[in-house]
Length: 349
Image (cartoon, rainbow, N blue to C red; front, side):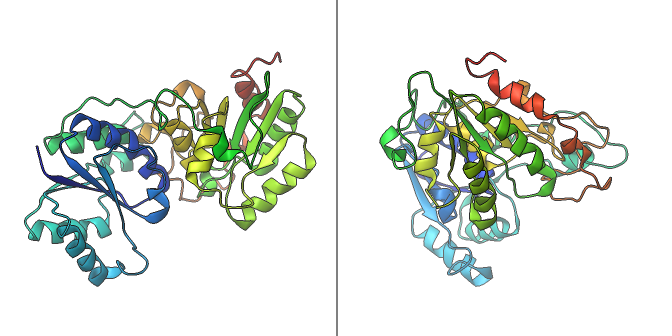
């Protein structure tokens, strides 16, 4: 194939992050093809150290590209780039309308198979079919293959075989000292069904802070999360919160690449750590890895979860717990989380 290929993936952040290993791999497999990644502004900053044949195009979906008229404007702008082929890795109403316009302009269109029907069976309250579904990474790969862009995934990290430049985050922390261990903790997610109870997470932070060679980095965003993480920082030693200001993904990704391990929920931070080849311990509640959203290269052996017949009850964690108690999260023991994290560093329990 030659020409110019448009890749559509507007949001969510974690899903955009999951495209990167596949997008970088296909770009490197076809250096003579120009690829254009269409996404939103915040997600576009994830694409650091990108291949030379990968361009970024920011969709301003809340302003000039909003609504049907805005999408028509966006389609015209994309047409002016000389797009030949469209690969829709999102398949929502916005991308469906956009790809229809582009198809009418003569572009070849290929679509991600999201497996919606089998995901509904996975989270069904009755007659649940609980089995591993095709991963998002494989679904992205298959979409490229249908477009005639077969390839073998070759991706280790945004930094290749290395790590991010320590100078990038020097205003947040000095370089890691000899014998020091860095643990990242990202305790938040978009939905309650994916968040380990904060009172339990604080106990994890407290226990880890007693380890004199351990430094903790807390990840979050926004005033609410900053207030909680700021309180933990003040209460416990060797704790740094990154939630007070927006540092940007280039800064945070560089820092994450130097962590010994990242503790996250089923959230974007799991995928950010995966992008820089940092080990991830992830806590899962209402959702389940069977839906296919485990981070790229993240080991299922490092998942902490409770096996319950009602799990998973939601693909994205946005449905309220019909038991009313989120037992799938509350029953996870603090000591189990603590011990799992310490298994990644040279500390004797």
